[in-house]
Length: 342
Image 1: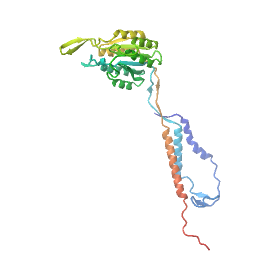
Image 2: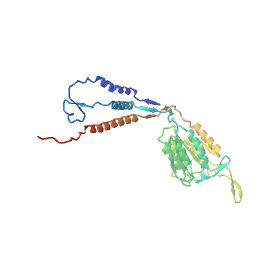
Image 3: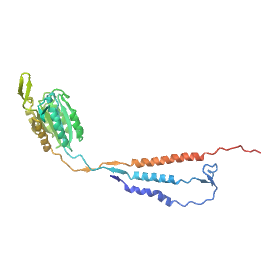
Image 4: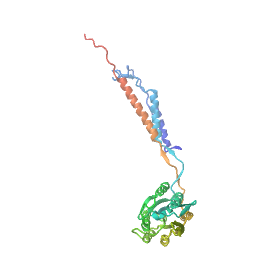
């Protein structure tokens, strides 16, 4: 939709008419008339013939003035109503990408997939539902690093999640350092909005900060930790001597994850399968609701530079034309023949 920010400015279009109306009447003076460019035309008391502005040039000047006034009125394109980013949570996703996440004990449509693939699938759906939240992504192994800072751009966050790979951060599991980094990123954010979702399949085996120390720091900063232990508890492993049933989650430190969640006011969840993981993130959605504020705005794009630019182009073109025409007219014709001397 097109609109004008200052519609009253259009009244200035009448300025040339008012100036012409108030212009005093020209006095009639008897004087010899010579065409413009004649060598006598510049003498005092001589009237130039052909110095009136042609009508087409007058129309161009009026059009340029109208365009300039239109630019002053500031035309704008007002877009469709868009909902502003709503007031929600600052939620940091902390995901384990150590080699143990390569264990293929998750099943989707009868096909085995590894734990990180299952996490990516479920997290994509979780991220898409968190409109209004600022989400960030921390990946960790031996060391943690920020894959995506807190952002409202959820599409980019999903892309960065898909680009993560097993072993990119090392082969160990530094849970304490990962929580410490998440706390550092969230501690300056508004209180009651600081949430960390930690997902791992193992125990803390590396790092400079112990998980308990990191949890104490997070609790002091008012951060809630939701911890998720992922991995099946039983699966059949085939070998050269036949098949045997094993527990692929034997290294998972559930006691630690429970303790971390309880000390910060969060909850611990156990994801033994893909449906359980989906249910966990649905539960977190309900525990950490988005606070909608219902604010909307219409994006505005200024268009004043189009009429302003066209006005300048018209005036410049007319100026160059008149200057060139004036040079051609004022050029004196060469004198033929010589003077007679007596």
